[in-house]
Length: 212
Image (cartoon, rainbow, N blue to C red; front, side):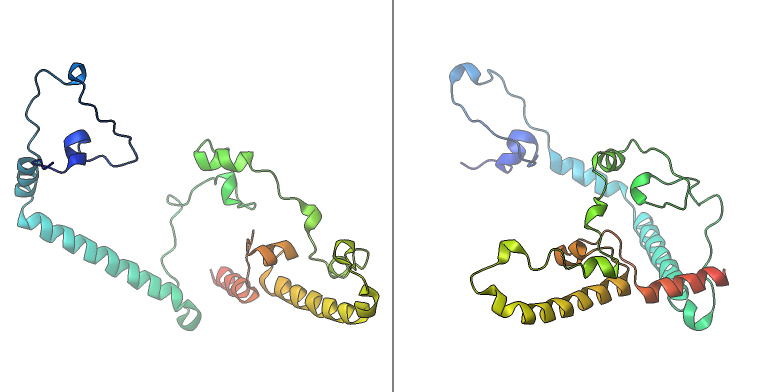
């Protein structure tokens, strides 16, 4: 079957967003009269015809100016540590007076967001602090070692070696947690970090704030 246009366009104007098509040749369901389809090619031609060369040139020039200004400002911000030159600050009018809770800006005024992100955030259960192990004495707790679920026959012969390996593991986990401000072991193992803070980044941020 060949038509003047692709079948999806003939059936639904080209809408391919998951709609289900049902085809029937039952005579009672076929229109007695059918209008000629709209000529989309003429419409496209007229739309393109209305866009002059000057419009295109202005559009390209505007895009170039935008990216040129963006790159210049970004370069100033990146080189701040070396040159000490501040990028233009946001004016008071451009700074939002309040932030939605899902941005978790605890040091800023917040408002109750009714957006979909706000609703999802409200329905998300609070993080269970019981699994926090950011204190050294907690991660080194021996009450749960060895794990009874993992015990096999003859395990006592390997307890000494296992404690050495467990100690090395604990030290590595603590080092990573302290270096990046990660709150617990579960975040490291799962790769799902609730809050990531590099000490070097935090230090540079504090210096930047002081210079401001």
